[in-house]
Length: 319
Image (cartoon, rainbow, N blue to C red):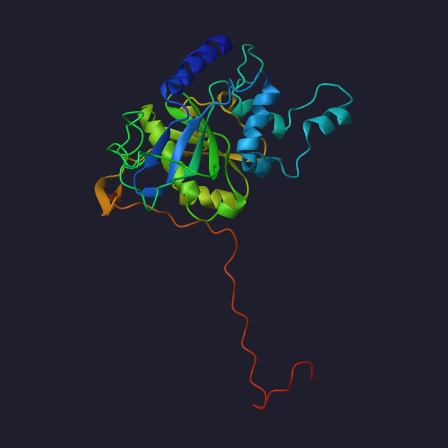
């Protein structure tokens, strides 16, 4: 591949167009996860301006912004500190540009074009459908390679707001994932794993081979990604894959990780019936490979037992 900036930018732009073929705002089920659905969104053309589009995204997914912006200097304060002179961009601006997919035509500017947002939403299934309930029927697959093997039953519906979200962008052979976050009160309940499974399904539909993830340097966060089968990407590997950091949304104090896509899971459909209630779900047939978490702290040692009183030992503090 030519290293000329202009030619490489055009090559990247063509590879990033692949994600445009996926339908937006449709609900997709995750096989083996009957309690959630996922959705691909675009905020690139939301509203009449960048500020309006970013405001809509912040209203829909406040947790995604809070996870990265808490404790960081905002753009207004940063501009005041520099007195209007050129300055580095803040994480607030990086998030706004990424989620709203701000493209650039200049070779010396960062290009955020092509980004989409994938969200995990709670699935709603009526527990007591009435006879002839229009929602209690088989739906249609919005994309042949997304969702369950069979059309959803009943129709996919959701209630509530996104529980976790990620920004994604297709590239030459990989799917880029720079920002991922989960609602604070939803963490530790498996929703991020559901999100990763949805992202993997999207990457397979686009015929991509790997995920490129930007992780913070927090030991707990890196341990979580390692538990989800992500590996640290060395500079030698990045060079061998022809993926310079300039092609990605690369932030300071972060670690580049990657995951080679596993083959899709094998599922057996199961239909649950009770009176007028009917739902199709899936049971996984092949085992799920799980890694142990990285050690983030030395194991705690049990304190030595104190001798019982009256057994010949003086009380604590006695000379």
